[in-house]
Image 1 (cartoon, each protein chain N blue to C red):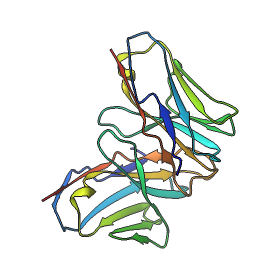
Image 2: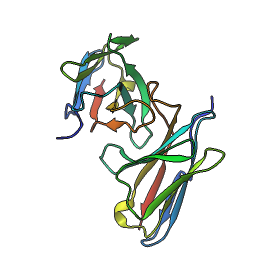
Image 3: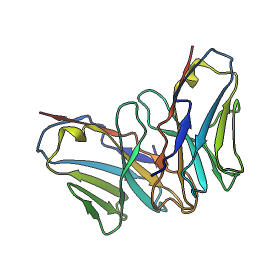
Image 4: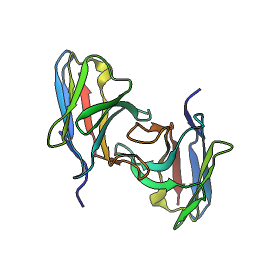
Amino acid sequence: AAGVIQSPRHLIKEKRETATLKCYPIPRHDTVYWYQQGPGQDPQFLISFYEKMQSDKGSIPDRFSAQQFSDYHSELNMSSLELGDSALYFCASSTTGTSFGYTFGSGTRLTVV
Amino acid sequence: RKEVEQDPGPFNVPEGATVAFNCTYSNSASQSFFWYRQDCRKEPKLLMSVYSSGNEDGRFTAQLNRASQYISLLIRDSKLSDSATYLCVVNPETSYDKVIFGPGTSLSVIP
């Protein structure tokens, strides 16, 4: 069965650079979520999109932005990267309502040096 | 106080043991509840949803007590492959809102 696809799997960037993470949700899932998980931390919600519109916003820095495109894939854009941005970034998708739980992608490991 | 709290762990148990994890949530309006497991450096994977009537899936049993705002996960006959971090996850509202993760409880099953 198709899963949530994230790319790239690993990314190394220098401070002050820009990074773009991509997420392809499960077909027919209408909601996409982005989470950030720092070392030893639980996943922290960043932002979500429902039917290509931003539906909720969490602890996402102003340096980050995201959007969902007409084909439902989503991109998380991160600018002026800081060392503290090094983390695992997970994308998840679901159908409307979460009574069936999310399906997470394998994540993108971002390392800022 | 965090919205979702879990036993701090870690839990180190021998193979075949029964282990129980506890979780409490602060938002009484929470609608949906889940247990996820996360292996080191991997994505969280849905283990099971938690229903008011309690539910069982093989060696795993989940219970929900809305009055006490408490969720539990019981693992019987622990296997080495059960070693992971178990995340209690709560959906505070219906529709497409985010879910809140607990801090996770680490389980190591020892031969």
